[in-house]
Structure formats: structure tokens, C-alpha cells
Image (cartoon, rainbow, N blue to C red; front, side, top):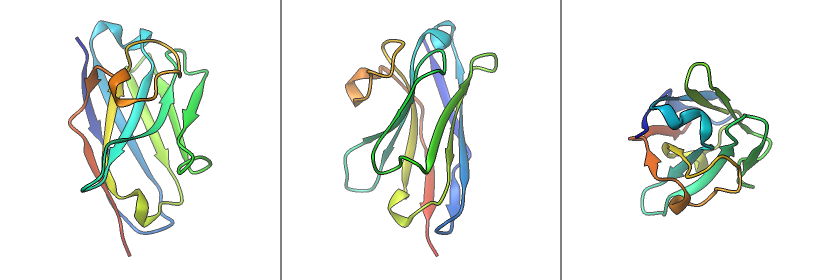
Amino acid sequence: QVSLVESGGGLAQPGDSLRLSCAASGRPFSSRAMGWFRQAPGKEREFVAVVSWTGGSTRYADSVKGRFTISRDNAKNTVYLAMNNLKPEDTATYYCAAAAGATTNYRTVTDFPYWGQGTQVTVSS
């Protein structure tokens, strides 16, 4: 079993930066790819980024490529999402998730059996 707790969300202005953290507990953390997803009101949950279990491979949604960076520290059982140049369309609840396997091939909601409770990010002037 994996337990995930997100933190770091909040209110930001366009162009600002935020860093989300996800603290994980449970033995399988270091053998799983970790992902971030987001869900805006009235929309489906969408993939944002994924990092392999080693941290050596990452993938991003086109909408965040070049602005967001996913990373992990397996010694601390934590995964991060650094978000730069935030835009109003980044407003959503952001969820951390643990994948069914170790690689960045996992990028759909159904590939991730474990989820955090979410943290709200609001980008507004």
C-alpha cells in the first residue's frame, strides 16, 4: 500500500512560480514511477508529468513542457513538481499518483492505482 500527501498549492499570479511536494509512505515507492495529474472544475483529470522510479526519465504534457519540472528524491520518499511561468489555465486541483510500474510509459489515469487527496493551485491576477 502507498499513501500520498500533497502540499505546496495556493494562489499565484500569472508568471509566478510554485513548487508542489508529494510525500509518500509505503515500501513500493522507490520501485514505481510517480506522476502528477490535474483536474479543473467541469473537466476530466489530465496527465501533467511523470518521472521514472530512478528519476532518470521524465515525460510532460505539451501544455506544461518547458515550464514545469518533475523530480523525485527516493531517500526522502518525495516527488516534486516545480511550476514556473504559471498561467490562468494552470488553475486546477493537482494530484500526485503512484504508477503500476517503474517507467514513464505510464501516463493515463488508469495506469496509477494510488492517489493523493489533491492540492489546489489557483492562478489569477
